[in-house]
Image (cartoon, rainbow, N blue to C red; front, side):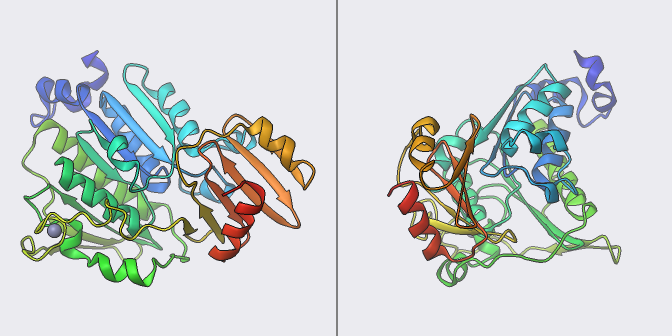
Length: 338
Ligand SMILES: [Zn+2]
C-alpha cells in the first residue's frame, strides 16, 4: 500500500507515520469547481482516507476550461458535479472512501455535513458560505483553508480555530450580509485557481500530518503579472463576533435567504423550505401539461415560455436566464409548490 505513496513518504515531514495519519483522516471539500476539483484530485492521490465533496450544481461546457475532474460525457449525462467527481475520483484511488454529496450547503445542514471532518477546504464562490464555514469551523474546532480566485489572481489563508485570526477577523460579515452579496462576473484563467487550490491542498496535507509549518499569512497572488504577496495578519480581533465573542450569526441563520443569485450565471437558486425528497416521476407528470420535461435520477429539467428550471431531489431549484430573485421565487412556487 505504501509503495503507492512512496514519493511523498520519502519526504521526512511526512514519512510512513504521516502517511498513516493521512489514511485515517477525513477531508471535506465544499464546492466542486476550479478550486474543489484540483484540491480533491490532490488529496485523493495523496491517500487521504475519506474525502467528502459537496456541490449544489451541475456541469456546463464553460466549466471544462478549468474544472479538471469533468469531461464532455459528464455533460451529456447531465451529471451533477458531486456525482461526476465521485465517479472520477474513485477511478483514481479505490483504496479510500470518496463521497460526493449533491446539496446546497446552508445554515440548517452544514453542521451535519461537516461533523467528523479533520479539515475543511473552501471551494466555494461566495462569501456567505465562507462565513458559514468559518462559524462551523469555530464551533466544532475544525481547521479550514480559505481560497478564492478571479481573473488571474487569487488568495488563500489558513484558519486554525482560536489560534489564528478567523475569516471574520479579516472581513466584516455584517456589511456583506446586509448589503447583499455581490456576484463576480469577471472571467478567470485556469492557472489562477489551480495555484490557489494547490496551496490549499498543501495546507490540508500539513494539517492532517500534524505539521507546524502552516501558512500564517494572507497570500495574494497574480499569475499574469507574476506577483506573490504575503500579507502579515494582525492577531485575532477581540471584538470579532465569531472567534472573539462566540456569536455564530451565519450558523444561526441570521442572514439567510431563500433565494441566491448564482455568480456569473444569470441564474437564481431557490432553496426548498425543509427536508424534501421529491418524486421526479410525479412532478414530471404534473409539469408535462405546462411545458417540456426531462429528468434523470439526479435532476429534472423543465422548460416553459423560454424559461428553464432545473430541480433537484432535495426540492432546490435553479431558475435560469434571470437575475430577478422575486421572479424566481414566484416561478418556483407556481410550478413546484411552496
Ligand atoms: Zn475572528
